[in-house]
Length: 141
Image (cartoon, helix red, strand yellow):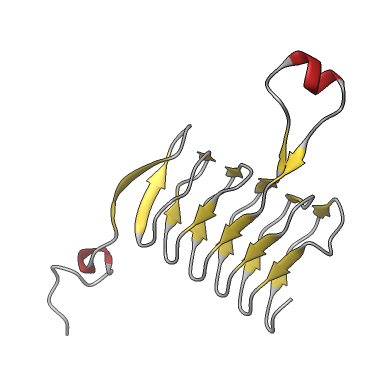
């Protein structure tokens, strides 16, 4: 865990030793990090309440699933990401630097850097631009 990390409990993990959290990151109440594979949360990442990061992947076929087969795939949340409340990230996903994930999203595949993405399944809505700054289009005093 990096310097200045803030986590509001409860926080749930399966193992804990497969999780790394970069400096200046914040995780709100009720997060569950299913860390059967590494979960890397970068620096200055802001995560809303009830976040779920699930690395376990179970077979689609009944026989293999009933035999107890499963694997775990890593999850990477790069630096400067903002994740809204009640977001689920599935196995093998990378969320790119500076992306924003809208509340309630289910992230089933990689999200590129510098975009706003939301939905179930999560989809890229648009790039983040200079006009997303609070002062865009307004006179400064």
